Length: 414
DNA sequence: TCTGGGGTCCTAGGACCC
DNA sequence: TCTGGGGTCCTAGGACCC
Image (cartoon, rainbow, N blue to C red; front, side):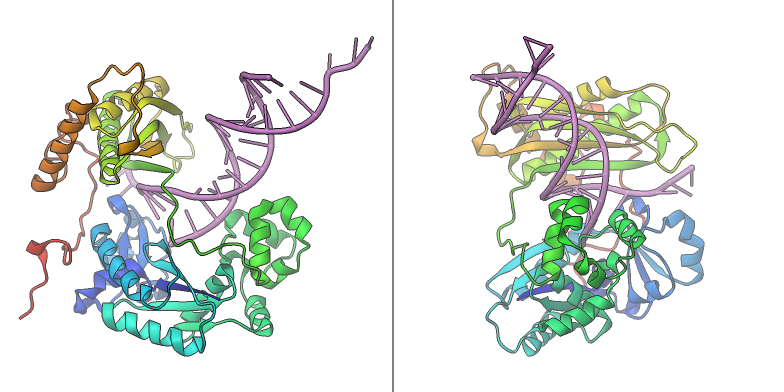
């Protein structure tokens, strides 16, 4: 048996944790750049605010209904997440942290599951203040189903007996099944498949043909045959990327250069934090997909890095070269995306036969920059090519304090 | 003016090899 | 007249997730 635990309205719950005055009020949390709504408290959902509602469009509504608005604050959420996961870990030897607010636990061989998960739930809520829900089933996909149903019930649900599972699936909308996205849901509904039970009744050949092995695994999992194991050790990262909309569009090459430099610097920093070097970089420009009258282009380039690196100056040199190759005049761009692939641990870097750059020196410069930026604040020291006063710094107008990760901002009582 | 950002996995098709 | 077959690697694109 598998349990899926997730935090209810996680970001909103985190914001609420240290602000009792927001316990009963609707809360929304915005994406980077305060672009759109990515988390809502129960009260905000009741008001009918949809996920990814653009903030600028919904601002009047939010104000009218006195909805508390927060910018996303990943330092805080990451820290609270770690607390929740540490608490859960004590309840199973087998745990996969699936995302910042979700994890699977192995429960095979456990007795009295109902009571066990109820106790788990109460303990986590008591120790962290974050509300959670638990669903248990014979497979991951069924645990997901149970979890969704648990939210509507008393916070935990165990699906075990076949007739119990069948009943749950017969009322479970196909688009709510984990792994069925918008496209597949549309296609399935067209042929009369509206629930998880309907999907399970489809001939497996049809599923294989139309939805590949991914669909087949899903189908089997719904029949209680585990195809998705609990992964205790995360796979090594395949890639890292930094991408961000400008909050407007631009056709100015110099500005795109600054944005590319600045995003590459962030990417390099992320690599260094993870002690990884990359052997491949990619740069992509994107026009504004919402401007349907304008011509859309998404030019992209993949750039080899001959000696794996993670120092800022060298990576910037590569991405700026890439930008030069793909830049098309006459379009208004809305976003730059810089990614790193072919990641290898710093200590395993092989030097290229044709190595011509002074890696050591550049690495020392980068680590010095990291130190100074940690001390004086992000962006205190940066490359000239990042520009003087970048207009694409994150907009975070509604940021809450670093309650748990900065002594200066610790909450005061009394 | 404004519409997230960071990931994963799978497939098809092309290039290349012997 | 005939124009292999089996393999690998890479890339682009699609679909999905939180």
